[in-house]
Amino acid sequence: MPAEIVVADGRVRPLIFPERLETPQAAMARRIANNLPFPALVEKSRIVHNRDENYTGIRVETQAGPIVFMMPVTSGFEFNVVHESETGPRLLCVMRGTSLNARQVAARFCFWLRSRGLA
Image (cartoon, rainbow, N blue to C red; front, side, top):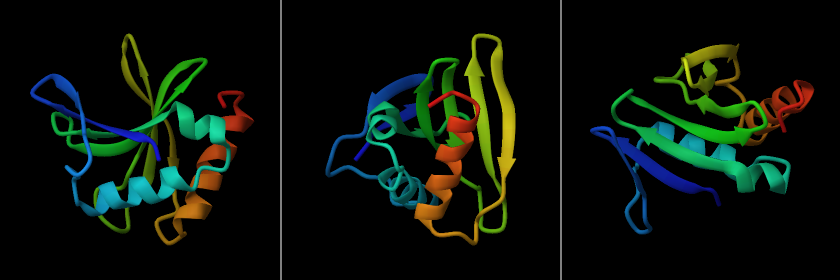
C-alpha cells in the first residue's frame, strides 16, 4: 500500500496509521493505488491529501517529474492528470471514468503513463 502524506499550511507530513482521512476521495485514491498493475509503479506512488490546494490524488514520480492523478471533487466529475513542474502545475489530461471500478481506473491511468513513456 502506498504511503500517504498531508500538505497543510505549507507543511508536508506523513499520515501515520491509525490516523486516516476518511473522505470519499481518500477511499477512492486508496482503492485505485492498491490496484495499480505494476509493482514498480506502486513503489513510486504516494497518496497526497493537499488541504492547501483542496485535492486528494495519487502522486507518481516519473522521469519527467511528479505526476498527480487527482480524484474527482464529487461524483460525476472527471479525473485530472497534472504535471507538477518547477514553473507550476500543468494539466496534461482529463479522464472520464467515474462509473468505472477502481481496477479499471488504475489500468487506464497506468496505460496513459506507459503510452507516454513515463512509467
